[in-house]
Amino acid sequence: DAKTTQPPSMDCAEGRAANLPCNHSTISGNEYVYWYRQIHSQGPQYIIHGLKNNETNEMASLIITEDRKSSTLILPHATLRDTAVYYCIVRNAGNMLTFGGGTRLMVKP
Amino acid sequence: GAVVSQHPSWVICKSGTSVKIECRSLDFQATTMFWYRQFPKQSLMLMATSNEGSKATYEQGVEKDKFLINHASLTLSTLTVTSAHPEDSSFYICSARSLAGGPYNEQFFGPGTRLTVL
Image 1 (cartoon, rainbow over the protein chains, first blue to last red):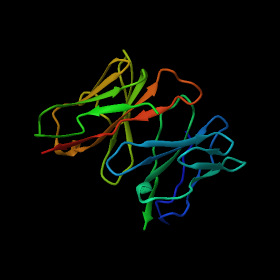
Image 2: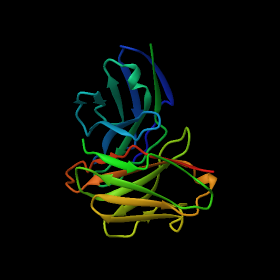
Image 3: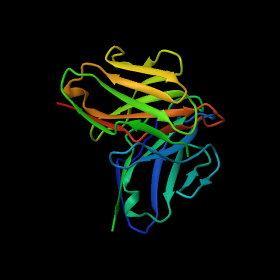
């Protein structure tokens, strides 16, 4: 699986949009981009995933660049409960999820 | 999304004893279950992958005789930490992949089990 690079930490003001970047320059054509988050002392929670097109659901939006070498997870109106570690993962459909360091997002009042 | 449960949510045991952790997929059948371990302020590390009815595949550096995995049914996998020592204290998280598959083969995660070995 391709590796990903994420900033180790980010701050965001409550109510503002949180934009979390991820680089995956070695992604191959059949690998998806997944985002999970882990709130302290809980299991990872699925957020969103995509292949080529931008995706949106009730939790977030995923913007994937045209060359697919990077993506951005957008939480449109961050709340204090969005404070968590966010993991960007790329993988084939048949492979397990391999976690990197993630980005620790701190939403501040 | 699909629900995965773990039991117990936390456990404290004495050094040298064995501890069993259960992982259940509550509303779907899981052909494959994964066990991860997470130390404080670190990321999740995959320990092993188990397929129903087969022996588990362990990642490099994980002792199969110490971490016994049983995946006897499509809804239950167990991890037994044998002869636990303080260095085994960690957050253990299971994950299940749906039998339904599809193009994404989603993995769903349990809430984790915090093991403390005294």
